[in-house]
Image 1 (tube, rainbow, N blue to C red):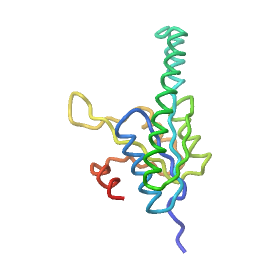
Image 2 (cartoon, helix red, strand yellow; image 1 turned 120 degrees about the horizontal axis):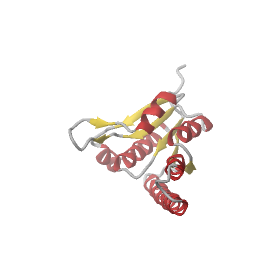
Image 3 (spheres, rainbow, N blue to C red; image 1 turned 180 degrees about the vertical axis):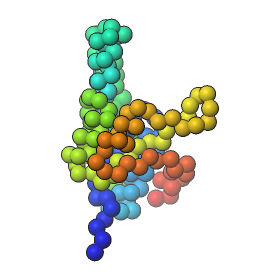
Length: 162
């Protein structure tokens, strides 16, 4: 008997529309394949700390920046819960703090994820090529499971039909 390809799926959400598409894709996977979905938002405190140490940010600015990112994360995760619930799917959500790559890989390992979903890449302003962030590049290299970049152009329509 063949083993299912994925039982646990981790979705990375940030402030991009592409990451919301990844959430929608994860919800569709849960609906179609009865898998568990966890959505994480990582507050990149590693970068904030680096910017503070190099005096680019003063301590008060870094604290305010982290606070705003946590508030953003809570909003995005609540939105993910709401759109999942609208399709009859229960998801788990979590805010994590640290390096984006390290926290995503750790979260995937904790739930024994067989798949990580990332939002599609952003177009470079100067040309039409897709640009991958350094965090996503690291995740692709360091993850112990498959990583899928959601670039489905029609995901919103598919999500609405489900």
